[in-house]
Image (cartoon, rainbow, N blue to C red; front, side, top):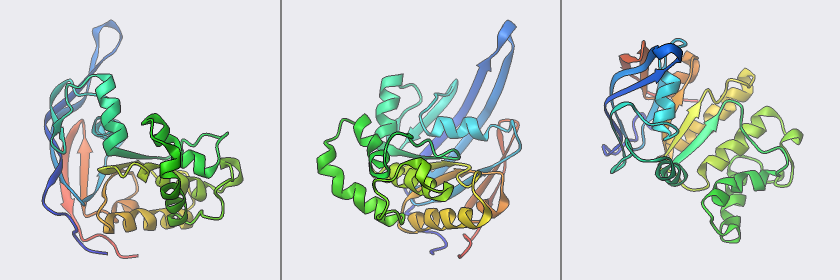
Length: 240
């Protein structure tokens, strides 16, 4: 895999991002406190930090699942900082693929149907995308299991379905939240191999993890503490 396959074009730009949550009795918690960050297209970035450091809040903001209290967030050329919920939802469907620790598959749907879910939200013609969905299932090694349901798959296979689903709209970037957290070490390595291959093909990856072995796959590792970026490492991504 290439050590650095970015093209120098910013895909994420955060300027002075703050996020404050108001709790009961007027108490406030500042989850993010003046975060500045630029991620270039094609990068593989890992975000690390102890519980309460702000890494999950940051991932939610990057994924347009929430908006900042202050500061600006540019995703590609769009300032998404102050968009309303409908606009954020549209951006999510168009530009962002999500990979979750718990897979978030729909139990009643087959592999191919789970891969199609983002297309349904985007009101796309499923017939026009059928070949692409089959291709993605084959890419993640599940071409023979298109009609299996999640309870007929292993954890690693379920996460592969989730990865295929995250790619179906050809998003600008993939956001992964502890993607190997529920997997044994061997299966986790296989899933990381797949994510690394996607990055080698040019897909931008931002991944939250507590595991340094997972973070070692990334070219940049951002360490957070108390809602701020404490330090950053630049690495040659591990070869596997």
